[in-house]
Length: 285
Image (cartoon, rainbow, N blue to C red; front, side, top):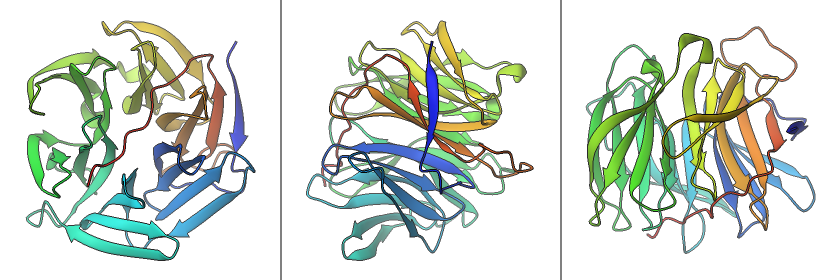
């Protein structure tokens, strides 16, 4: 039976998201979008560091040469932590000043896939972007209320991406040139399930999904069938990453925003699921 523990006990995130395993730092990074802040848990010592940010930060991805790329409300930026510095790169959506970035991840080709959304969650103005190592971005899909994910199949054929507001996870076919085609609804969440949030793929090719409003994480087969669920004592579960030298430690973020404060809402959890994950990829630029 899976067990959970709370880690980073002094941190309670308004909107924890963007969980990232860093082999280079032997650490788990995650963001508090509304804090706004970037957090780090050092696995060797359990020490937690929190860097306040000046604007909402949706995700971070490690750069192959060091440092990070971050997805801010104002767009893409480089982030260095020692010494601390932020260097803006560009805003993909100057026409939508109310939008912010929400979730993002690098693929095996060194590209970042990320989504944008209306911060007020009133307009379907969100899009899915690919940010390439040459620092150019491409809008590949649009019309999202709350984009989440993405995740990549271990075989490289599929991209998974959710619209949390519609309770659906889509699956795209991926071509060799990095394009995506044939968006199809892959998994629908019932109202009782909450909404699909962040996700990741494990070493057996199964898709793990966090349930916003559903208080759990679930594992789906490559065909989209529910395999198992693990309940957590947080109502708004947001993101998942596998970590550790053997990629056998699972960390899960959550959010307290909009809730009468519960004892574990907004906590970072470690879950003993008995499964290994896939390596984290770097941004190639």
